[in-house]
Length: 254
Image 1 (spheres, rainbow, N blue to C red):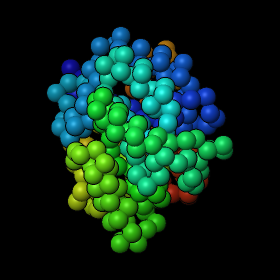
Image 2 (tube, rainbow, N blue to C red):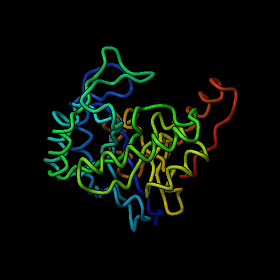
Image 3 (cartoon, one colour):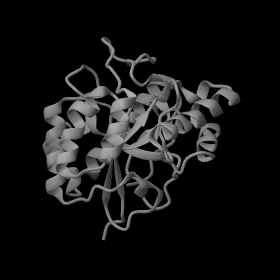
Image 4 (tube, one colour):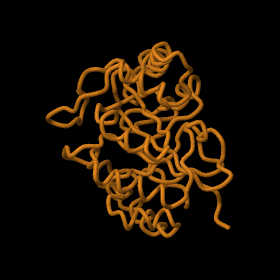
């Protein structure tokens, strides 16, 4: 029997905007339909803190784009899937304005919609205050960006915030130590699946832009996707070496 695993799906915008952080509504709907048909259970984000008893999926969104509310949530709700959305809390109600954002900028949800979605079953996590690269910050600002974001969301929603995602997936031992002081889990952008023993403050995710081919996504859900995932991990590793001249830590064996 294969070892239990948790597939943490990573999304940003569900729209026809250009770039890898946008997935078209049609593709997203097909991905969710394939997930529903597969029988792999979609579990609460709180399951990230516990090793899965069997295979399961958590659905995550970074940045809190307005199209989560208008496009993604109706599809998820129809399937009974409960996702988590990580919010850069100082920017809600504005448009993306961080390094590497799209042009034209995509709008973010406002607090009225976030509060309403929370009552409908959407979970929310922290994604810093202003979406900086946390690894570049002095210790005092790092603490503020990490801790205050969750505190502000908690005050708005009247519930504790247990989960965090560093912007860009940028992390370091110092960043992870800071996050661990305030949150139960943290997810990054390292490509892979979480298993028993995974670092709860450096959990890997599956970037769903890599699974826009629905046949390939179905194969992954059926347990036949190890070769493709290993190839993607290797290509990421090579790109990192070319870009930085340094080898990033290898992903765990799947």
